Image 1: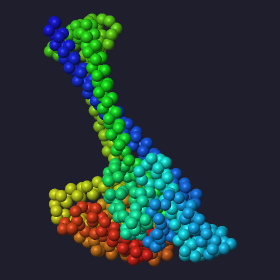
Image 2 (image 1 turned 90 degrees about the vertical axis):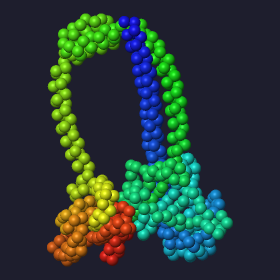
Image 3 (image 1 turned 90 degrees about the horizontal axis):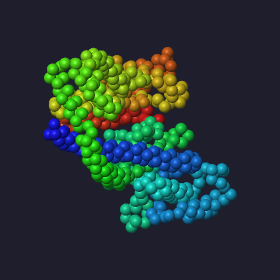
Image 4 (image 1 turned 120 degrees about the horizontal axis):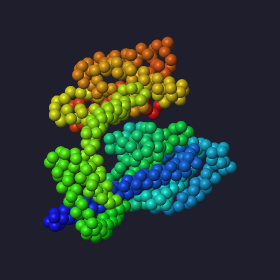
Length: 519
């Protein structure tokens, strides 16, 4: 018996030590990731609030800001602004002096409009106004302890962004660091900047951030659309760096794990001594009784286990539970069968929910999530078959904003659904996806791939027939642009490159139809 006790005690010591350390480590990791997730959410909340703060400042002077942006985009190359200014008052005084000389007795915005002012006065006003807003963005950056604030303006060429207000100043080349560089422009492709472009296209404040991992560190970027008088002007960008905080949280978590582990090990040793003194003998008898049951499958052993369950401690309760388990094993098996059935029903419900998640609520066709899955399927086939034949057709409804503004969003939805039905009927042998408010994608395969020219002619013909059908309501005489591109294994590395060419072809078609997105 003594050997059994010592053996059991040693095993308990190993088990308690192992699982205690495991629990401490997992608990520490859970704490770390919980703190990281909490901090990430707080970071996103902070940068969103900072973006909304800058938005409120701009909207308080919305008319002048719209004039300022228009002048910037048209004349930034003609203006020299000192790189190292730290106060806009001097530029403001120069503007006011020049305005008083050129337009005596006038008041800007009251009896003289910006466009009517002398060009030199306009430039002086712009310099003062740009210095004011650049300092405002820099002060917000310093006040809220974030690394970057900026204001982006999308260009007509899609996916190009101009950093109109850049919280990280850059000097103009060949100026010896004396002149501020304006009009900093970057190509921001959709697949690399999805959150940024979603915020712009939807004009909404999203519940997510763009994650960056670049020369500025590991950051979250939030974009606040700026809308003045119902028109989208740009995006207010705010970023926050989290790498340093992550390292601090990790260091604190490791220290916590080490401290807690030491304390717990000491407690476990004391607990093992107590268990050895008060409970090991009962555990040994319980083990022997359970072994007898395992060998003989005699349920009467439950009575012996119950007789040994003296006292009111947890071990006695465990013995009673073991006896009850033996007596109710058959009921448990029945319950297990019923549970298995319910799990099957739950799986069916989960499958149905998954199907709904891939469906567009307005049109009933597959949505952007389903399209992403389709892209992964096609790219998998490309890897296995480099000569796969497929194409992408991009379809975009024209004048949707005009329909919504003129007749209402319900009529706009009717136009979207009508275009959807037409695309689905014409491209009946290809999957159709709604990936945006007025954008559809068709993955051309099989017969649709072979007969695409006839299908395009049919598509444009039906649009022409509807345009000339006086019996239709204005929003039913839909107009749409379509662009097609085909996969070329010699030049295309992915579905995305085919998508880009189809998207470009669609926008060229929109321009031909005088229905570009800036309509």
